[in-house]
Length: 81
Figure (spheres, rainbow, N blue to C red):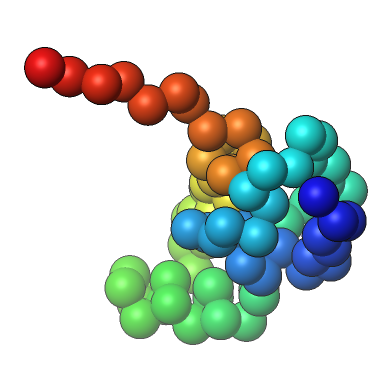
């Protein structure tokens, strides 16, 4: 497989770009746009109180998605009778 590069973590959700890769390497931290995240939080809760934890959870979700759900290491499909 040819090298695939995504420098901005902008397509690591439900992508097939890494299918067949033997190795997946990520550098830096996947961070959602801060201003967009603040606007979303403010719209939901009317304040930015607690935003830091919310933003950290967004980052943690992106890390989990990158590690556990990429197509480069799919689980073997089970055949059922």
